[in-house]
Structure formats: C-alpha cells, structure tokens
Image 1: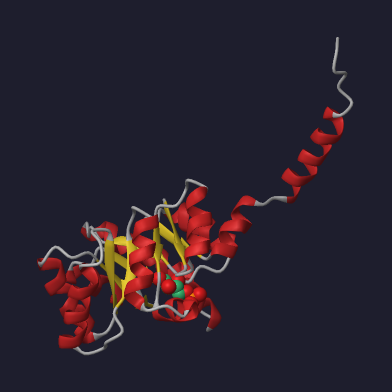
Image 2: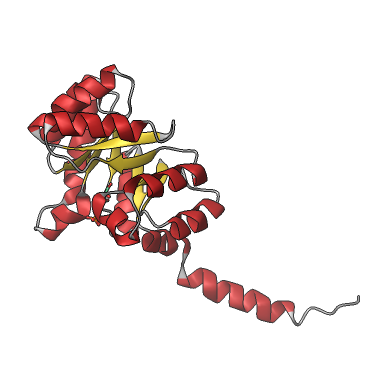
Length: 216
Ligand code: E4P
C-alpha cells in the first residue's frame, strides 16, 4: 500500500520525505489556508520535494470554473493530481479531464455508490473520508471495504485512497483491506513508528551495552 502525507506544510513534507517512505502528498483548501501561502506557490514547492503524486484541489464549484482551474493546476508539474469534489458538475469535470490525460482525485466521498460514479467518470483516485464518517457515527472503514469489493467486482482501475485518517488503526485496517493508498497526517506517521516496547528494549540494550568490556 502506498503512503501519502496529508498536509500542505512543506516542513512536515520534507521530514516525512527524509524517512524514504513517502509515496505522495494530498492537500485540500483547509490545509493550504493553514500555511498562509498562495495555492500555486505552495503546490509548486511540494512538487519539487516529492516526485510522487501531489493532489491539489480546485476551489471553484461550477463546471466551467472547476474545469478551467483544474487545467491550470495541471500545468504546475507533471506529478500534479487535480482534486475534484464529488458533486454533479465535479463528475462531469472528471470525465473531461480523464479524456485529456489529467489525473484526478475525487474527494469528499462518503458512500460506495458515489465511489462507483467517480470510477465510471474515470477518476484516478477516489478518496473516502473515513474519519469524518466515524465522527457522525458511521464506520468509515466499512465504506472502504464496500468500495474495494465493488471495484473488484467490475474491474474498475480507480485507486482507493483512504483519506481523513485519524489513527494507526485506520492505516492497519486499510492495509488489511487491500486499499491502494492511505493519506496520513504527520502526527499519525509518527505514531506508526513509535512503540513503547521498542523504546524499553532499546533503553535496556543501551544500558547493557555499557557493561560490555572494551577488551577481551
Ligand atoms: C484528503 O485528501 C483530505 O485532505 C483529508 O484526508 C481530510 O481529512 P480531515 O477529515 O482530517 O480534514
């Protein structure tokens, strides 16, 4: 499974990239706004750090404006993936962009039926938001399971990108289900690395290493 980071903060992206495990980046308007930087400047720098797919989202919500904005975003770098919201006009835009060879990530997906429509429009990625479903009392990962099953039934190529990840358990379950990608906040990447038994074990090795005689 590919691991993306879900942030627009270039410091976090650089740190995650240094781990050597980062396959891509997703951003959204909220994450870009938090940086205080213009969208294009922010995405251009991210694309220069990470060679893998970098999702940048359109801000418009009408067909003509989304299409124009998506084409503009696609000129930023070859690894840009244009994020389009899962609304009626968004699906139309995805169909056109797919025909033009522009990669898309259909965002704000909350049901398997929405995911099928995105796949039929030719989306490169579908982003089910698992954490936000959990927040309203639905089991977000159940939706991921249903999408994977249905895509398998019909052979859709659209990759399942698990989004709105809140915990290591989301990542583990996504892997068990065979999701293609999980996009993970910086904090959760740190949680994936850390285990208390690793820390305790290392402390003991360091203490015992000090008892090893330097000469035989
Ligand atoms: C996905 O691409 C979105 O940027 C993101 O995962 C949303 O997560 P949130 O629900 O934590 O805002």
